[in-house]
Length: 387
Ligand code: AMP
Ligand code: ZN
Ligand code: ZN
Image (cartoon, rainbow, N blue to C red; front, side):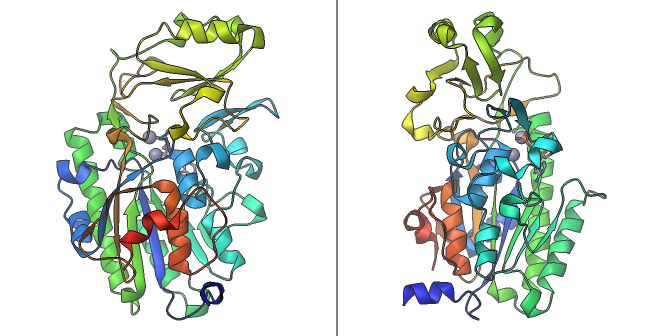
């Protein structure tokens, strides 16, 4: 009976779900700054601290939220990485490689939904404008399309999707904002300007909630507000230069910063490891020795040596206008993220013990009453937040 119910995606009892990502929104920003709208969501729904996947950066984690797979399994193992097969660098900042579907493994939730007859709308979520498995969300907007939409325009576009006639209306909407990440990098997580941006993002959450609740079926809409990773202070005094330890001729390729992947020349693998083990404030592992809790090391896009800085340390000179960074271990509280959820399917005034971000895909599948793909996520771990 359960299976039958799940397959019947368009039952009237299925609610709508809007999931919002505020990039780089650390879990404790609501304790540091005034966030009345997020506080109201906590009172009316669920409040939690969510762990990102490793590494705590934007492309790996947004794609984890979409697929339920850790970066090691979905292929976007960092914001940049060395593509061994084609001998070129993938970079989120280079649209030629970013938009190449071959890099994106696993199945984003919008595809799982659409295969089962559920329409989706997507505003700028990582992967949404890329032809993964030759398809796109029902409604989406390419990141590179001009004009680049303001935050207010994104909210209004999402509202036009929700106002479509019932048969065309998306059941799942994903909405992305690149703040407070930008301000967190520029000013540091604990600063007046970042506080102001956090407060502005909070007010936009209030605007979105008000507009959603004003819809005739507003009471049928779940709203989740969360993020990809946190933010921590960095300083020009906390820098390690890998080149002080490793000779360039020992390596085929060195790529990425937090962590750095080294593709060694095999005869120098031990020399590289031994040299780096002398450096303070970094961790160095042979790929097969990476601690299991990081779930990192099976992808061929990860070098045979992985070098990770400790929280707040950097591998290259810190640019003078950068005071915050992320990409560190998910177990570091500064990397953990805010999570709020309200709506017909969520408990009210509930503080969760926390969960990991691979569990979002099974959560969304449950809310949409669709059959999920097999992933690294577990519905059992997150279902406590549901009514
Ligand atoms: P990070 O370097 O991890 O702080 O990356 C954050 C940046 O990722 C944002 O400021 C955006 O410029 C970029 N970004 C976020 N989403 C997308 C997307 N869907 N497509 C392209 N770039 C994106
Ligand atoms: Zn980010
Ligand atoms: Zn960032």
